[in-house]
Length: 214
Image (tube, rainbow, N blue to C red; front, side, top):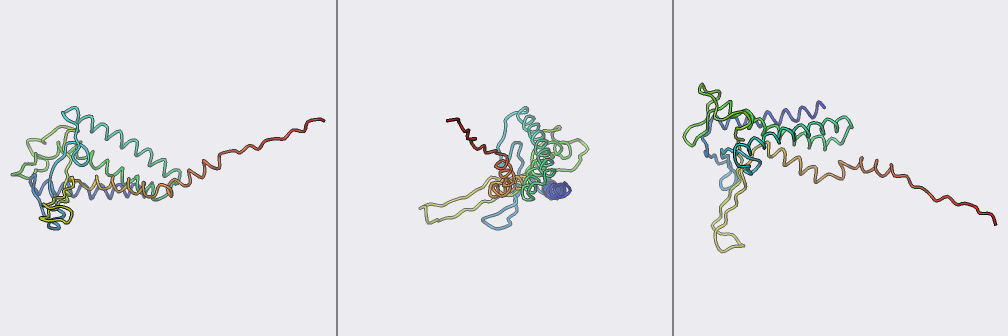
């Protein structure tokens, strides 16, 4: 369990450090080119799920936050049971990534509204402002920043220009995605032990021949 806890802690620390730095140093919509015409740090806020999916209204946001909390509880229970069963290290690592990512986004929605002033295109957010935060508990926005965007004047498969744009995401989203992809790629290896136990538990009954008197 210690190894899983370390993975969750490290991912959460990096995730929250990056988000807090961006929120307090960049204005909303501000952008830094990491690789021109490919990868940018673009500060945006998301009141919904990963990649900008959103449930509308105040109750939609509250429902989403509560669902995230319940999901983390379920993931935590599953992770604990995997460690107790001495499951494959790769599976424990993957579930730890998923749990860390889920917790990371919960922290944003639960506490950022209380901890920061509102981010605007003109001003970066202030930490613990005297006038209070921009939203109530569980109603904060998730900070997103990783943005892949490319524009080409000519491409071989089209006569006109082409623009590729991927939804903006954060470290928590990345951790969840990587965890899920690893499980999908190595599921046979991760769950091989369970499959073997199921096969061994099948009892094959051989027919019993009865000698009948002539």
